Image (cartoon, rainbow, N blue to C red; front, side):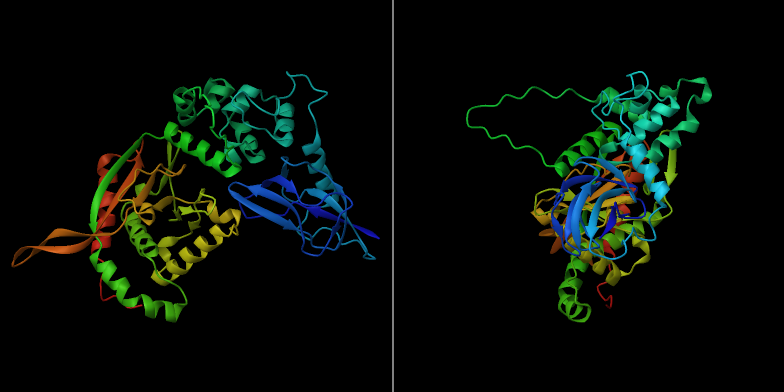
Length: 437
């Protein structure tokens, strides 16, 4: 008999921790090779963790709801192997894992309130045992923790967040808590409204939000509190694109094995416009503007559950129409099947959402923080329109679509936002109907 250490796997380059959602096996249960043992969540993606060995679950080291660092041992499996199938070579040394587990397992039961922060702050934000242990050792108060901008799930403070904050404490002679608060956070605190009391009448049904819906709700409220939203509109003549797609779609599917939709065609033109207006491809960090080197375009995707997820096409400006089509179809299909990796929904610098897929003419989208702009495209409809020709103006039937751009007025003025939106429209209307595939 041997014992195998099941570790929290690394789910992506930028993912340092995950939350245990549900244990699918309990101590004493038999486990087949590659059989799921537990469900975890990282940001918006839920994943099942399969067992790399066959055996019996001997011990569970963490509870549901615990936040675990990657590579930490989360369970032990008894196997029939003559030699223990130890953790993979990528796992840390045993003494390092022991330290991580020990740090994460430290409790505040023996500590006074003055010595260590509690698991939840006044805002309701959760702090993991590891973060609380670092805060205790460094003398970081709950007030300071509440002021730190969190990059984790639900805005939670991660180990990297608190370690990055420590060197900045007390800069410029101000208090640590004040120094840590950025204008965006202060705006959120000032403008956060009190929710009204809601009465429940006879026959009303109460439906609790699922985890993803809670996250979406929090993210949307935060975005409106942080960014002053302005929305501009433009009407676009999509006739060239519509006629070209109608002409090539069968041959495209036969040759590439993919259906071509308007989404990759629009994303291609958006990427071109971003290259023309790079100040749209930025984020705001306090009083600093971060110009993004890469153009990573997120595409809002509706899930069967009714929730929304935004997979990201990395370096969209470097892909041709075929590459974008394959990326769009692949990400959309795996999003609906809950097969996305955490890295595939992170790192976006601009978002496109297609409200036209629901038959809507236009929308006023909410910015996907920390981006500064989001484009909504409406349904393409046939309409009578004036066509200007050298011989004079004509009235004809054209395929028209509304585009609406919401942007962060802190850094994107009406001139920049309006010019960028007009450039997208120009690129869409100038699509060459003789483009070869």
